Length: 407
View 1 (cartoon, rainbow, N blue to C red):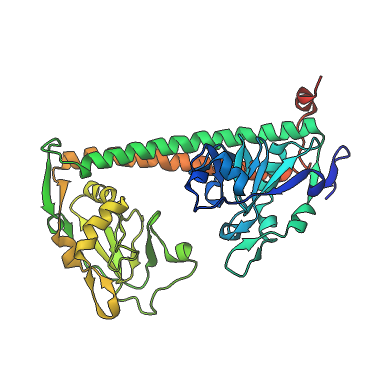
View 2: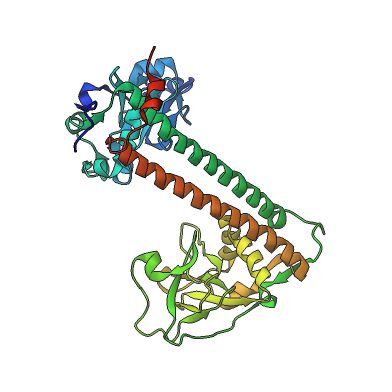
């Protein structure tokens, strides 16, 4: 890699000082009753560290841990998380940390934010350096970390690059906060509809058995349809796109057709507590699912949205499905169409009431989906910027860099 003439290549050990943390004895409660945040892998999910669920005292710090100062970087160097990502964070206050984490204290040749972005931009490269510990966790070799080559622009350009990238971080954070707020609003609406005693609050609602509002159409495969599966987060998806390959039988004659707006549920729930998936199909074309799924047509499309909304809560899905699970041979568990339809729910039976719920849910979900797409777009742009700007391929304009020159 050819660097700009004003840049240098420096080994990481020339730019930072490494220090190790530790864990105070859990047998001494007084060590865990302080106000010093104690950082482990479980805390390292954000780029900035301010606090933690666990705190230690000054005595706990002296007895087994170590302090990372504000603007130090914390890098996870051992743990199962390293097989998926390389957590690294910048300390926004003094914190303690455990033995699986290294603190990187920078010297005057590099800024902490610039180094943070370098690590974030090289996740795939760093993951290739992770080796096994013999107990299932991954780890970094400290000598290899120290030998990492870091492209180093002058300090003003480092600061300009970091500030530019932080603009994307702010956009991502703002968008994700908005997503969370809208999801909370939608969840609150669901709780108000389904989880509280309405006492006639909503006109056109009644307690009805599902067999009165769902029909089992029983259309079978013609052999020309695409095979779909049901995903907790994505609903009905093409099986190959979702699972990487087809798991369908050679003969799909007994597979069930799914029409637009149908309700599909898993007959064999999984999980510690039997938990099935109930989703409405939005596939524009006719598709098929295996006999492991039950398929129903709701009385109205809007009622299908209401039912999909009801079962979007894992708790509500579990509460509905758990009592009707039947144990079969070899401890298998299953639900039949008859038992699925036998239970009752408080639902809008009046079409006007159904439409009111469907319009709100459809609009809210549409807003959330658009915001998620926007957040993904920002993340993609940020990754591209990091790859270009941290190698010197793209440069910050000199007039902007000059604003970071010290007087």
